[in-house]
Length: 326
Figure 1 (cartoon, rainbow, N blue to C red):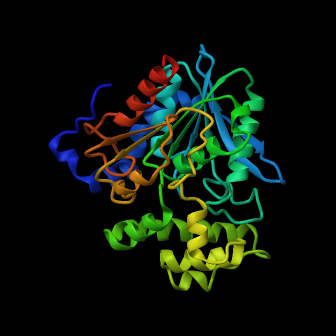
Figure 2: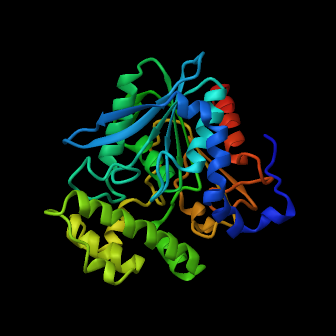
């Protein structure tokens, strides 16, 4: 595989983490992904227990029998720059693409009464199952970014995942230990905390607007602090006894990935400002799991040159080829 070789300017981890999501990139990405968007059809997936999740399916003119399910990070969406960019490259390579929205992400706050949290694994598993049933006979690839990568790795480690026919999982900068990620956000550059607090607060207000009889976040938003907000919402909306138990509930360190039902590959960087690379040593030792660590790349960035798609897109396509011929 061609190594990741960013220009000197692009070796800054904060630039890598922030620049790809900027609004000024939006026009460039959507122009590149014009065919993906033109061929996009909205889906409403029955994920079990009355939960509905939205997804978007796009197919190339000549599908090759593979289908990739793409899942965004926390407070991202199916319309995120990285989702559109990768989706277009996958479709160009012959894959059908399904871009999935987590609960309360994108324009979906009206679909479910309950509030999103990161331990809602059964509904993401249900969404993957619904996609597999809707498009039978496809070789199913799961590709996730940040929290989306964390979710899809957990899906592949769930009992019964083998029945889904997953060809492989690729996780880009996945959350490893949420407690350590929260600490990194608190101790890192303020721009990351402010960004997530702003996006999360906006999302909570949308939820409240759709379900005013069920949700009122007025008091919560008077103290916009990630740890405080998470602890309060865990107490109000989950069965977890405290914040630490909730964070451990979606950690993939320890033995969580010991029983993967398919080959899984993690792509992450040594300089990720949000996901401490040291936590990689705490993953289960499993021959199904491979980890590729680059020196640079920030969080989900992996830009080699400005004006070009992320090297992560190339990595995903090459990994699919390598796993298929292993």
